Each structure stands twice: as C-alpha cells, then as structure tokens.
Image 1: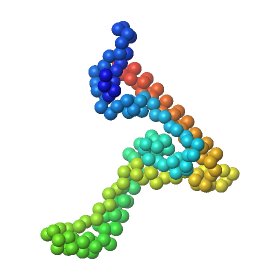
Image 2 (image 1 turned 90 degrees about the vertical axis):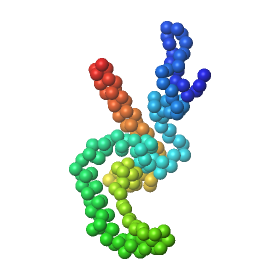
Image 3 (image 1 turned 135 degrees about the vertical axis):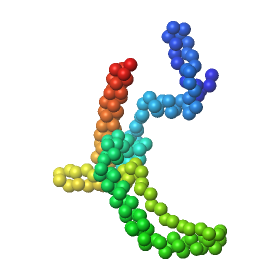
Image 4 (image 1 turned 30 degrees about the vertical axis):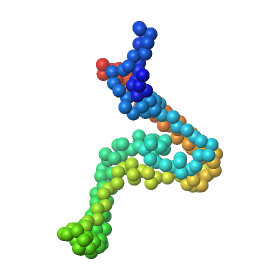
Amino acid sequence: MNIKTVRLWNEQTKEDVPAQFENPVGVANVATALFNPQFIYADLHNEDLQDFGTTKITGKLISSLTNDFIESQEFKALKDAHNATFGKDGVNKYLGSTEEELGNRLSEQFGSSKVHFKFNFPAATDLFKKGTIDIEENGLRTDASNKGNGMQRALALAIIQLVAERTSKRQATFTRNAVFDR
C-alpha cells in the first residue's frame, strides 16, 4: 500500500479500496484541506498574532474580507498613484543619472548594456502584511504589542473564533449551493 494513494471505504464489500486519483503531496495536505487547526501556544508572541501573511490566522481573516476592495476604484487609484510616484516623472527622474552611470560601467565589462530601475506595484497581500492591530480601552488606543499577554491571547482567541464562524458560514453556503446546482 502506498501512503500517497487516497483510499476509500466501500461499505458494501467492507474493505478499503484505492480512489480513482493519486495524492502526490501526501496525507498531511489532505488533512489540512479537511480542517485547518490553529494553535495558540502558551508562549505566543505578539508578532505571531500580528503577522498578516495569508497563511497566518489574522492574514486569513484580512484576506477573506478584502477581496472586494482589491476590485474597487480606491485600489485602482492606489495603483495609479504608485505608478505616477515611481514612474518616469516620479522617483525614476532622480535615478536617471545613476541608471546611465551603471549602464556605462556594465557596458565596459560586457558590451552595450543599459540599466533601468523598476518599482512594481506590490501584491495586495504584501500591502496587507504591513498592517498592525490597535486595541482601544477606556478611550486609549494602543498597539496590541504593548498590551499584556492576557489581552494578546484573548485577541488571538477572538480572531480564531471569528475566522471559524465565517469559515463555517462559507462552507454551509457552498454546500447549500452545491446541492441546489445538481
């Protein structure tokens, strides 16, 4: 038996049989697809909680809520502003002489060459990674990293609960739609 082969239980023959497809990535990824455990360790650090990367719990929450924003006029305006700021009339006009000088030195070593600095607009997920969480108590707003361990753990639990609740609703909607589409 190959551990990378998904097997299914056949209730009629009372035996497990290989499925009609192979799972080349192994059992761990199949389990992750079925459920997504989130751990809150006793020594949780605030930077773990405030990591907005798409594989982290807070990042998953942010990502699930910002899909419409990425299609919005505001986001398009941000892209346009970035292109203007970093384009030929923005930052690049200050770098022109350095580009030319680097190109000349490169040409001396390898033949005719030109250098151009390029500043691509970052992916939305990269923009969101720079976010932080503030908590307001008694009218005072403070970065979550300046709160005590108890507050940070409570925030982590609240985020996990919210993600679980929204994931359950999304899965219920998907299941309901799949049943009606048949």
